[in-house]
Image 1 (cartoon, rainbow, N blue to C red):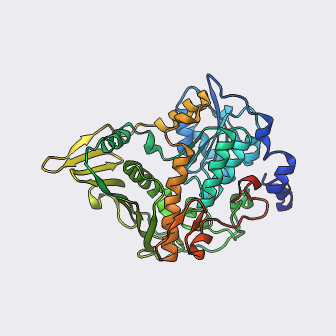
Image 2: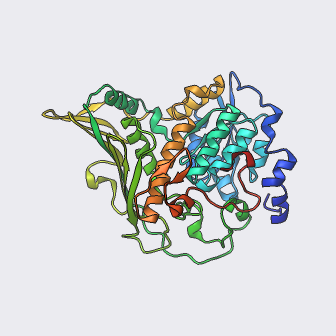
Image 3: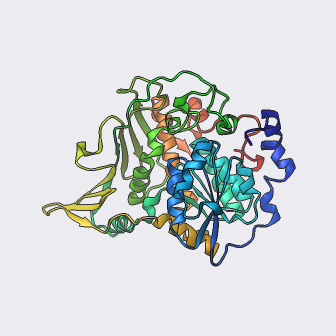
Amino acid sequence: MSGLSRKEFLRSTGKALVASGLLAAGARGAKAAPSERVRHAIIGAGNQGKRHTQAFGAFSDCEIVAICDVDPERRVRITRELREPARTRLLDDFRVILDDPEVDSVSIATPDHWHTLLAILALQAGKHVYVEKPCSHNIREGYAIEAAAKKHGKCVQHGTQGRSSGGIREAVAFLRDGGLGKVRLAKAINHQLRGAIGREPETDPPPNVNYDMWLGPAPKRPFTKNRWHYQWHWFWDYGCGDIANDGIHQIDQARWGLGAGLPKAVTAAGGQLYYDDDHETPDTQLVTYEYDDAYLVFEMRLWTDYPMDGHDNGVIFYGDKGTLDIGRGGCEVTLIGEEKKPLGGGADKDAHVRNFLDCVKANDPTKLQAPIREGVVSSALCHLGNIATRVQRRVVFDEDRCECVGDAEATALLGRTYREGYELPAEFRA
């Protein structure tokens, strides 16, 4: 793929892909999910791609048949995670995976700006999809991926793996059963020491890297190290800040515990209070989501380490009878007048991947622990938090009309402009 010119690549993507039949691959009819073994491919070989390789490779009924990344160094490095590397193709062109009828499922571990487009293309090619969080780079994309999943009837699991944790599921059941009485406030906390990224000059991309494909739907910009591996999270073209990178886990669990969907309105404040470097997204952010009878508050700071508050990233529910804490180390409940006590077990390693594989084998999306609708809503909360932060005023979102009521500036941030050749398929454009 690295040898193709931009003109040649554009001929075979976007509108040209429609003509060539790749976008309509699903019409060829995908074979049913295998009864014994899932043939799985991974797109993206960074930190999350490595975790996917470890998790999917841990199950004997899953064979990792291909891994794709535009960076040749990452493709080579990830082979260390494979039990049988000789059985896995290393690719720089995702279309090879989508056009292979023997591939049953894909996981998408690319930068955020590729998530929705790749997921839709995979669905059209008849594949089941495990898509990393956030499933979308903006709110309109979320509805596009949801529509594609509904049309093609495939499993689409969102990478909010806390939904497959037995401990967290028990905590949510405790809340549902009234264990805390009426819960009127949930606080989702994301606090960690990310570190400065400095300022990097524009340079040529690394050798043999298909940087044009990496940019994909994003605007054409010169290469810098800070817009590259992992640091892309802090630029609006590719990422959505830490609210959608890590905070989405806490937001998802908070609204799950509250039994809440999209909020009535969102207010927020945030910016760069600590780092003075190439960051575009906030290092400090406070977001309040308004519901009829409760509030969900998101608190983010990227310049303090976990132990400052005595726990890691987590969620606190406040009810009439006490509080419930959900953290990465487990769940604890403190009822008024009683000692704090653990609730449920710890995290279940790879349970989310196991759930996805079981659903793929059964060809049954209804049993997914984090179906795409839940991913769409939790991602939307992150996007609305960012929108309210950027416009610096209260935002009221109308889902039916997909607009921010009376606010053209905020509404413009619900979507984005796509680079020619990388547009969403026409049927899923808002």
